[in-house]
Image (cartoon, rainbow, N blue to C red):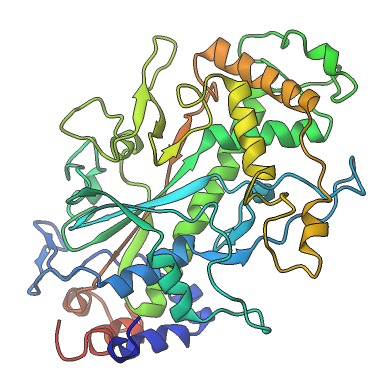
Length: 430
């Protein structure tokens, strides 16, 4: 970044009190250029639309899904000590936690200029950490800026109408002048990582939906307890819960940054996830353009991935579930993976730490793949009872219209950062 053009609001945000971000967080939806056509809050903004600047946008994106250096890993697993726990799928940490370090989500966003992919899931440490454990914010933002990849021109094609957007959000969600942040999770990969996790801990599964055991699983009785299997529905419900936490905390981290910067916006779920991903069935509503399939056995379409961008760990993006297991193993133990001895880190003996995890051998992979393939064969998709790709919630960032809040609310409806945002972030005008 050019230091001469950095607005004073940037330093204000860096010095903002964390406790004020926590207790000052509020959904503030009315933006400059917005209009509520009727009802008690009928109001039309007197301001022109004002999109976020690139710097403002990068601050929000980096807060929502920024790289925070190397992941610390989990030090010990009871069943395979003294080997290092090998659950994690990513060597890098991010601004939000992920169950067992799976990190199976990525972030998309859209503004008036286009639809973008902000790729940080498998990023190495992007900036140097000081001896005090901190980063230079300008270096960090610049490193993240180059992770942005444009996918399409123009704002995400999502009509501001029901059923694509909930009725209470049609006047505000994804409107011109706003930045809409969309974390997307590879739930197929998360369930597969969960299968690895449970297999490592001696647990296998039975198909409680179809009321049957998984054939040939007894040959792995020395790895897993075939006498006390868990239900598949539990695995998929648990994985969905874990992934939703990952996506939600990502949005919440971005939401806290809005308070520090004095931006309006809110965290919400009032958009149809199938329309957002591109699985509405309406060619006029392509959303993010994810591939999806339908089947008479399913009540809803199933998105599986965006080819070349974010492909779920399931067919048709992989030959079969054994191929997907091998890909997950490569993500963990291959180049750049958390358990590859050549992957850098900040341990005093990084090579020794990373090489102390036990790789997934052939037998282990077969045990995981057998269970995963059963799901795919019997449900026609993987996972069987939840979507392969999942999205919820979202975060929207925008410039607040203070006049609206002054008109309808008593003092205290917004923070000092909001009151001074234009002065501190846009000195000398827009």
